[in-house]
Amino acid sequence: MRPEPSTRLGWLRAVALGTITLMGILTIVGSGGGLGSVCDTYPDSCQPLPPLPSARITPDKVVVQVGASATFLVETANITGPVTYQWRRSANGGLDYTDIPNATSSSLTLPAVNLADDNTVVKVVIRQGNGQLLEPTARLAVSASPGVVFEDTSFETADWQGVPVLLGGSPPFTHVEERIATGGLPGAYRRMTDQIAPGSGLSYMTHLQLPTAYDPRNQGAVRFIDFAQDCIVFTGSSLNYVESGPVLEQNGRSFVIDRNVPLCNSSSWTRVQRLALTAADFRQITGPACAVGETCPDFSLSALPLRMGYQRIAQTTPGGTVIHGIDNWRVTIWRR
Amino acid sequence: MTSSRLTGLRLTWTLAALGMLALVLGGLVYVMDRGSAPVLIRPWMPQSPGQDVFGAAGAWLPTAMHTLAFSLFTALALPVGRAWHWGACAFWLLINALFEWGQHPSIAPVLADWIDDSLAGTLGSEALANYFVHGVFDAGDIVAAAAGALVAGLALHWTHHLRRPRHAP
Image (cartoon, rainbow over all chains, first blue to last red):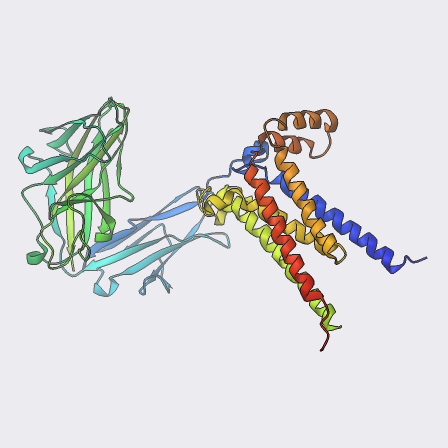
């Protein structure tokens, strides 16, 4: 005998209500009931995730003069098994790419670039099997004129001015800088010793090169700045790390970069660099506030002279001492 | 199909969709702010979970959305009627409040002991005990559940007006 329609509907309704109630309660319990992750409540059920595959192109930005070559290298991490590479290039800022013929290795060299290559975006498509894994990008700028180079390899004491930066009422620290005749890369280098205050964990210094400056009104508007140095941290300094990037000084204001600041934490000389920096990469740390309508820093043709240098943020245990060095400081200014 | 049945069907689907949307929104808090993304979608998630996308709302949104969603689902499975529908909302408010209350430090250990003694070996009993012991009691969650139930009740109440057959003057 077939059940009456109303009986069937009643059963169906009961099953639906039971399922909904069960799902609702399971959702409550499964949520973990905390303000944090589900893993906080059920740690046994959460396995640590394997590290994600990653890839990057070095350099990620570069400026070269017309006629020079540009070389890019892809570095990968956490990728197991064989992969294939296909380099591609874009002439419209990364909207459309075309394959570069025969560019299927982990590095790419563009020989004898010309002004038509300016603002090229290169990308490498990394594939594993049939799947596309990663596709990091990099940018190439081409300059018609050579870069204006400021560099120091001998570090005469009188050529440099160290200025402490005290942020947020941080206690002062003791800083000593000296020229050491040997032990650099090669020859002389500049050694800095920071005695950190007991109530603090870091020292912050900017160092400006005194003899030279770049004057945009006479030498041209700035398009990009390359920064490079060899750095070292001497052992036995109870060090955590030293950050060191470029410093610009203009019209009584100091500017540093605050993203991807190079780390110097090796006990042997190590080359670090940041390439193709623009005005937008710099942040003011000292001097009068930038007025409305003013550009800070100003890289234009009417800008005031720029002095260059480097910054050092040394971090260690409160009261500790950090001894670090610099050699082969080099700033290249690429003009518009 | 008569127009009133068509309207009823549309309203049912609309309320079901609203419930699903609420569930997804509550789930997003776990995925975005609490670092609980399912393993399958983690490669597409930001590298560092716990981003605070929802801000302070992330603390109460999941409970409110859960109560809202399941009140609607339950109401849709019940006969059409205001009493049934408000009853569904009250039921889920009560369930959520009881589970939250069970996390209170003065109650959670007692509950967990009882679960261990009485339900040991039963499927899910360990998870249930963990829920009460490790979960964080927050009176704000009970308020959030009440808010979710109220919104669901008002939505259902509003649909009663739309379902009512209209006669030509």
